[in-house]
Image 1 (tube, protein in one colour):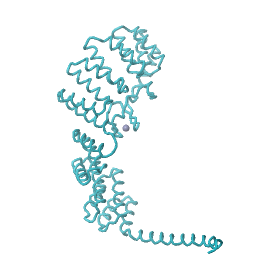
Image 2: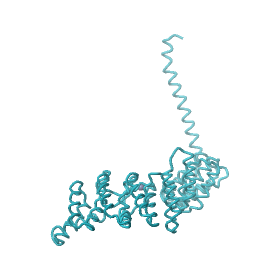
Image 3: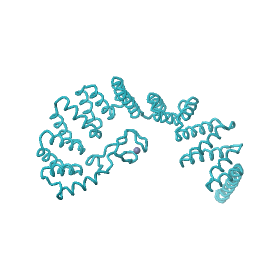
Image 4: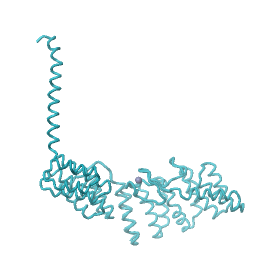
Amino acid sequence: MSLTLLWLLLPVAAASGWYVARREYQKKAKHSSSNLPQDYYKGLNYILNEEPDKAIDVFMKLSDLDKNTIEIHLALGSLFRRRGEVDRAIRLHQNLVNKSTLSAEFYGQALQELAVDYMSAGLLDRAENLCLELIDVDGSNIAALRLLRDIYQQEKEWFRAIDVARKIAACVNESQSLIIAHYYCELAEQACRKSDLAQAQRMLEKALLEDPGCGRAMMVQGRTERQIGNFDAAITSYQKLESKAPEYLSEILDELKACYQAVGQKEKMIAYLKRIIRNHHGVELVLTAARMLKEYEGDDVALAFLGGEVMERPSLRGVQYLLELDMTQLNDEKGYLGVIKSSLDKLLANKPVYRCTSCGFTGVEMHWCCPSCKTWSSIKPIHEFQWGASI
Ligand SMILES: [Zn+2]
């Protein structure tokens, strides 16, 4: 064949290839649409017309399920669950699980969806049993393991949650140390409530072994030592926060002050605060120092200290306390300073104190696990002039 002829035939070959491919596609499309039973369209119409129960009845009556119809079943089920219609999701997924013709793969998927439905409905025992069944078949089913860990977390079955978290860490290269440390802290707090302080100490040691930077463990450890009467040990635990988790320093100031007072070293507390203020500018540190100075050294010393701090790092709460001190001295509660102070009080009264760094949730109460996104250690105190956060 000459080279010219070859060039002439090339477009013909391309066109015939395109024609064959198109025929093949049309054949496949025709075949796949005819595969979907007519009743499915009826069911989908019910969904579009906001008649979900009629749709579910239609789907549940279908006897022959193939890959496409099963996937539609699963997608609809999770759609119902996301819309908060968990009962409907359960009906659909239960129907799938009961089909004897379902392949092992789809049976597993349906079972997992059903477990999520049960968890959403608060039927934790049922969800747990399904997860255990799934893990029994495949010990590295990571989705089932995560779900089981969350179920135990919700049930406050902390030891079981720790076991499952360890299994997750072994299956995937994903550290569970932060979460496990919190589980140990939960156990420690549980023991504290039962006045079993020795058990609390053991749990806190484990928490810190798991995550040496666990600020919560240091705080609970300080509280436990204080309860036992080991004030020096409590002070040491609280002060570990400075290097390991300084964002929580503002949370322990009253307890730390009580410990220093118990050992008769209140001056040391003031000196400590003055030192750490240089590196950790949380306004609570400044306010605690100012309040202590007022208490032990008088208003003038407190005013001079606070005035200097506020000049250096302006903060609304700092100004608020400064006004309070100043007004007491000037006896000016009804003058313009009083107006400014009461306006500031109102402005600051409803400000959130904590913010989740993961989802932005804000509140006035400290949570170790965010109530909104369920992330551990993501909620931090809002500091006026630290880490870029401002109020
Ligand atoms: Zn969150």
